[in-house]
Amino acid sequence: MKAIEITEFGAPEVLKLGERPTPTPGKGEVLVKVSASGVNRPDVFQRQGAYAPPPGISDLPGLEIAGEIVDGEFDPKHNPFGLKKGDRVCALLAGGGYAEYAVAPLEQCLPMPKGFSDIEAASLPETFFTVWSNVFERAHLGAGENGEEETLLVQGGSSGIGVTAIQIAKALGHRVFATAGTDEKCRACEVLGAERAINYKTEDFVEVVKSLTNDRGVDVILDMVAGDYLPRELKSLADGGRVCIIALLGGAKAEINLNDILRRRLVITGSTMRPRPVTFKAKIAAKLKERVWPELDEGPIKPVIFKVFPVAEAAAAHELMESSTHVGKIVLDWRDGA
Image (cartoon, rainbow, N blue to C red; front, side, top):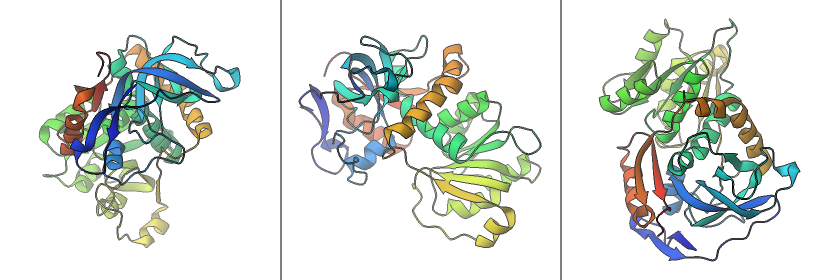
C-alpha cells in the first residue's frame, strides 16, 4: 500500500510518499480502505519528534480516517454498532492513518453520519473524541447548581478542536465563548455558535468574559494554550469552575495562586487521548453515538473543512497546520490514488 512516512524528524518536507505492507487486523480490529485522513496538530508534533506513538502502534502518522471496512473480526462483544464488512465508517486511531489501508479497533469505528462525504467524516473522530472526553467527562460541563446549563470558554476557537467544541456545546444548550487571533476568525466562531468570540490580540479575554457573565465567570475552559494563560484563566472562572488542558502551545509551566484554588474550589485537569486504552475510547464512542451523532444526522452540527490536499501534498498540509491561518479541519484525500 501507499503511505505517508516520516523519513526523519524535522520540517514538513520530511513527509514522503512511500510503500508499506498492508496491515493485518488483529483480535477486535478491522481493516479499513482509507478514503480520507484527517490532519491534526499531534501529527505535526510526531513529525517533529516530540510525540512518539504508543508501544505497538504504527509509526505512520494519522489519528483519524474515513473509508470502507474490507476485513476484520466482528465479534458482537466488540461491535456495539453492528458494523460489518462493506460498511462505511470513520475511526479514531492511535496512529497509522496516513495510508491507503489502516487497522482500527472495531469499537473505535463509528458509522458515517447521514449524508456525509468521506472527506467530511474523516474530519470528525480525533476532535469529537477529544472534546467529549475533556469538556463533558473530565470537566463535567452540564447543568449547574441552579439548574441552568453551564458556560464554556474555548481557547483557540477556530482550530479543529475549537470549532467542534463550540458546535457540540451549543447544540447541547450551553452558552459558549471563544478566543481567536483575528477578527475574521472571531466572526467564524460566532457563525458556528459562539455567543461572543474574543480577539486575544486586541482584547483581554478575562475582562470580556467577566463582562458577559455579570462578573461571575465561566464554568469550564477548554485550554490548548496553557503557559501564562493559566493564571488568567483562573481569574475567568466562576467559583467551582474547571480548566481542562489538552495541549501546551503556550508552554508547560505556569505560576498560579493556589489560594484561589482553595478559596474558590477551582479545578485544573487535563488529558491526552492517544495513549488511552481501547476500552476507554469505546466508552467515548458510545457516548458520541448516543448524544452527538443525532446532531450530525439531523444537521445542527456540521463539519468545518478548511482545505483538502491530495496525499502527495501532505507536507503542504502540515505547513498550513503550522501556520494556524486555517479555520476548522485539514484533510488528506486518498480517493484518486497516490
